[in-house]
Length: 44
Image 1 (spheres, rainbow, N blue to C red):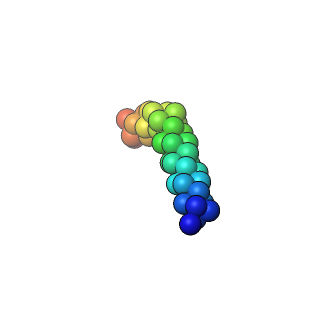
Image 2: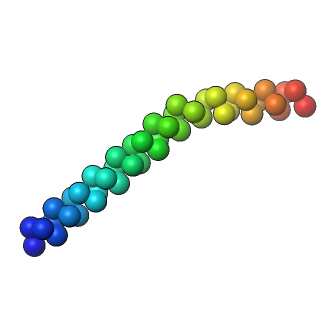
Image 3: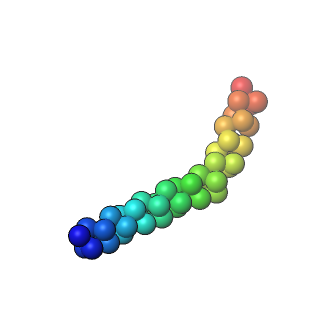
């Protein structure tokens, strides 16, 4: 039973780190994407 709990905690930790990296990447790149998208919209 301990092994199952450890495995579950490990998967949960990996999933949390993956979500954190995705959110961090979005916060890093989303402003640039929005800025270029808005500039293209204004150019049209």
